Length: 360
Image (cartoon, rainbow, N blue to C red; front, side, top):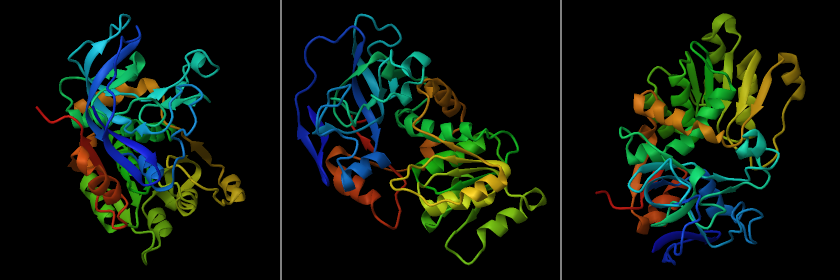
């Protein structure tokens, strides 16, 4: 079968690999991926890896490089193991890609995303969404409603990341919110905050193309350029009650300046949520955190049971995740029109999907 595999830094290849063979384990499912997104984690591996893709066999999954990429994907069930009852051949599914023990400290508490042995489909598992077939555990495969498209089903995974940040900020009807950074996760966090009823919503984003997208996604959002002439903090305070700042600030960049902007912009007793992943240490003003009596929430992935909720939000139209997709490409174009296009500093692409299986 054809698969897109990561070998080393800037070495991603579309190549022939052996297809899954033999009998499925009783708790496994064979799927054919349909649509798969390229994630920021994939980009980090491409530019600076291997980082999380294992050179030596993974402690839990045993997977090692080269790695079939892809952890944001929709699929169709081909075959199921004898213990599988929640999906059947022919079902369309969305993949929850986290793999971890069910019986360690975190697994016994249902906190599967926090296991120290966690692996991930498409990063540290033998199979990924950028191959023509994949073998997965039953718990990784979630049936989606008929009203959800293949693209929307592929977008549930990044949407779950963004929604978890909004949840951790306890955003509710009437919450004032700042979203700092409109990459894919920031754009989805903006949509999730809107779905939660946040108002007003502020956006800080230096890239003009992404500021324009933020206004398209949520026209009532108040959008700022943090590198422009306008004082973002003063402008935010001027548009919040008594000039106190926002209730919740969602940091979606993973950058020191963005984090500190969020701390400055949030009101006393407000909440800053770290949604973006920092790749290096950040210098912060801990005294200011104390003075403002703020809560700082950090997030890692998402609770794995959130898939049905995200799917229902998408099906209802309240969470139009497909609107951040800017390109759908073919597997043979994954390097030029996928990875390299997403690394373009102009930032014209937001979310690139790969059409793994030709549309019927």
